[in-house]
Image (tube, rainbow over all chains, first blue to last red; front, side, top):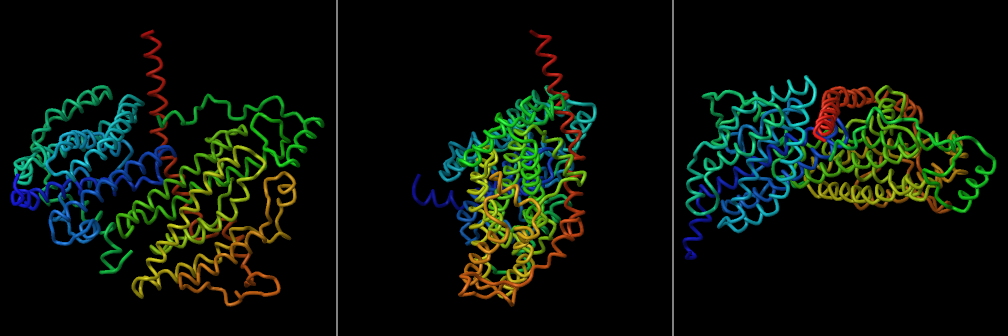
Length: 260
Length: 334
């Protein structure tokens, strides 16, 4: 590849959006997961959930820093996390939904981490060497998230009557949001074209193959398909997003230009 | 696996060894070990009063770590940068880890974590009253690291040599992490003090609110302290409340100068003759009010802990039910 072609690849808006979307997923799910710290059902889960939140925030820092550099407008991780409004965030809607209860929290991590894991696997061979390096570090974290959350999904689904009911309710609520993972997008096309990363739509079969056995083991029934498609990754979010950002961004917003 | 550490109801929570009976020869051996500066280990004979004192102190310490996750946890969602968010989250997670080591140390004395948790949630057990003060601004997070963790370290370093082995070893690890937290707190404040006028005001306001509660953390004056004598004899307490408080104040005044904040005590001044800083009168009425449940956050802190515990009951039950089912299935397959 010539130097000019590399330059073109590195600065394509699709490439930037692809990386930023991944950073936003990690940031917003990390923010949500961290809400559990100090409030979990058992002390060991305070530790585990904080751990997963820390991993996600760490991934967000690397991805947003990288996205900011690719973008070339001088925005660092904090400018991107704290100075953008809802429509500029490209995270999956699933990541911003409220935690609700422990069943929804663990099921969300189980569904998302299995998707993220497939993505990290493909990104190990990205033409974007920085992204490949982030994938190499993050893949180990995603494996742990998938394992830990999966163990809980099984325990809850195949636990008591109440835990089964809650796990099924969590699945019924979250499942429609998973369709968004695989909606084709222009950013995907650009990234795939340049060898940056896969079209997310191509991960659907592998993701289902990873998720179905887990849900079966947990004795959970797959909800019927619905026509609804959430659009967070295109910048059209749920009502929850504005509240999440209002809280997360508050200090940066009321002290413009301050350093922390 | 995280659930392995869940308290199993069928465990015997008060399963004490038969060595519990008082015996003059064992007492002499115990005293000699303490006098020689040795460690008492879980399997060693120990006087019942020593055991009870340790259970009370270690569990109060564990409860303090767990309740202590709440005031700082209040700022995780609003931390002003991603780096500060990660640091704060890791710190609050460390406090949970300290709680775990300490509950484990208490369990070696024959009490169960569930029983200790019940004592906390029912209001029978105490925790450090410093956590009944509210965290009102981002600077509170830094000030808690600097002053509250700083005071905790002063209190806890002597415990690394306390006579009960499991407690002493837990404290070595905890003290290392606490001193890291203190440095991070101080670093966050230094950054704020180099910032805008509003940020500096935020720090001074936080110092004004946390200074007196921090120096109260060393407990009542030696002349009013009920447990000190026996605990010193047992090697559980090595340095008196007043000596530790003085040491903390002497060290902190210099740090306040580096930061450029004013400690809110007009009587704070160097006493050449004593070689220490003199300081103003501590409002013990406030201290006892907060200890006895009348601080701003006592009700809310305990309510938050109870809510977490009660809301989590179905999760703990599910884990047990699933483990039972899995065991039955394995048995049937064998």
